[in-house]
Structures are given as structure tokens and as C-alpha cells.
Image (cartoon, rainbow, N blue to C red):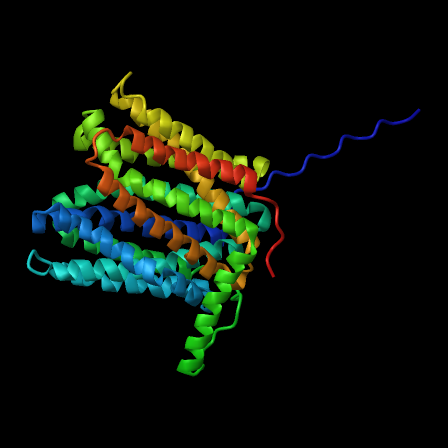
Length: 421
């Protein structure tokens, strides 16, 4: 009598990266830091608007945050690769907290302090963000990289969901002083959380002791090498193109969304705030779902499919006004948009982390971020020029079509590729 073979044991389900101590510390630090960033991101333009009585004063805050990142972001990525990521995050977080303090003395007559601090904080952010993204592969295994990135996206959405309303409320109750103190405290907490994580060996040795001229030449050479890595990789070139097209679309959206909500929907500033805010709810849900999708579809499908869904939802939102202007309908659409926005971001950063060797990860991430920022600036400029041209729906349809184009490019052009040498 033969005995039937026992059924094969099902593989144990891997636990969430949040059960890894170091990832949990980095994740929590990011949540705390980003929440503080949203506090200031809301309060600074409000302060500038009230101090100057002009929307130009508020928009200048956004400009001085964008320009330093565009000019220096790619070079700062080289420094991220040369420094220990854990130590970099700790030091930069402490600097961010200290360099916020001049805002305690800002008044309507000293707006230069506001613009200077906004610019300095943007430069420091261009260091800490690539360092944190480059550190994720060090604290999770390759099989959990996409899940880890999806959880980071959850953290980003939670920070926005928490920080945006608290920022407005804190500014109303305690003014800029209260917001500055709270934000500085978040940077201190961030530094402590990252400091108690375990150190990981750097991808490349520190270059301490180099002669200044030699160091400058090496930094320039490493910056060029980072761009060469992007040029050599078909996947990175495609991701750069998608970042450029998506950045233009996002810039157009930032300008024209308010016009659409106020003119086409008649919802006013409050309605615009509600619709934009609820997208973070979709981001939280999307981050949780993306971890499950990533295990089944892979990062390339997350990028292509995510952009296609995002484009379709955008087209639906921009062309629905003749049928309904009910605020809850648009709130639902923007919650739904939160899911593909997270899947695309997760797929993109996972592909970069998988393809790029650790020694060059910071500069490649910074270069991609710079491309996206420059494209957003172009979109903002185009949106400002076209906002008063009459019917903006065709322009928003073009904006949505850019997302669809990103999706088509992602589906057709992203291919499997080995890690770069």
C-alpha cells in the first residue's frame, strides 16, 4: 500500500518591515519629520500672505524653496553617497531644527529672514530625503524592498493628513512662533530616533582628509558618473522621461486645480482644501494596498498601471462638472487618486534602488528629484500663463493625458534589467 505524499508546506508569510527595529525607527522618524515639514509648509505662506498682504509674497516662499533644490540638488546627492546615511540624517535633522530658530524673529519688516530660512531648509531637505531613501535598502531585505517603500508612502500621506490641518490650526492659535517651536521639536525627535538605530557600513569610504582641490575634482567626477549611470541604463532613462512628463503635469495641476474648483465647481477655497486634503486618505490606503500589489505585479507594473489609472481618474474629474458639481463626488475621486499616486512612486523608487549600486544611489535619486522639480517649475509657469485663457478644461485634459502617456511609456518601455556595475 502506497502512502500519498504529504502536501507541500506553504511558505511562511513574511512579516511587515515595520517589525524590523531599524526600519521602524527610520519610518517613525520620517513620519515625525514630515509632519513637522507640513506644519511649516502651511504656516510660512500664511505668514507671508498676512505680512505682505500679497499673494506674491506667499508664492515667493514656494519659489525660494524650489530654486536651491534645482541648482544644488544633484550635487548634494554626491555628498549623500560619500557620507554615512545614518550620521547624515542625524546631523542634518539637528541643523534643520537649529536653523529654523531665526523665524522666531521674523516680522513684516524682516521678510528676508523668512525667505532665507525657507531656502536653507530646502537645501537641507535635498540632503536628508535622498539619504533616507538610500538607507531603506540597508534596513530591509530585497524581498521586502517594495513593501518598505510602500510603507514610506503611507508615512508621507499620514504626515500630510496630520500636519496640514494642525499647521493651519497652530498658526491661527499661536502664530509662527508656535509652529517654529513645534517643527524644531520634530527635528530633534527625528535625530534621536535615527541615532538609536544600528549603524550600517557605508557603501563607499568617507573621503576625509582629502585636499580641497582634489575633493572638488572628485565630487565633480562622481556627479558626472552618476549622470553616466542614468545614461547607460534604459530603465533609468525611461524613469527620467516619466519624471519629466509627470512633473509638468503636476505643475499644471497645482495652478489650474484651484481655478477649476472655484470657477467650474463653485466650491470656494474651503472646498479646494477639502478635496486636496482627502487625497492623503487615499495615499494611506494606497500604501497599504501597494505592498500587496508589489508582491504580485512587480515595480514595473506598478509604474505603468498606476499612471494609466491616475490619468483616467483625472480625465473623469475634469470632465464631470457638466453632470455634477457635488463636492463629495470629487472628494471620492481624489481619495481614489491617492492609490495610483502611491503605486507609481513606490514602483519608481524600488526600481532605482534595485538597479543602482549603493555607492551611487544618493546622486541618482537626487538627479531624478531635480528633473521632477524642474519639470514642475515649467508646469507652474505654463499653468500661470494659461490660467486666464478662458476654458481651462482642455488644458486639464492635456495635463491628464500626460499621465496617460507616462503610463503607456511605463508599460511599453520598462524592461527587466540587471543591477548596474
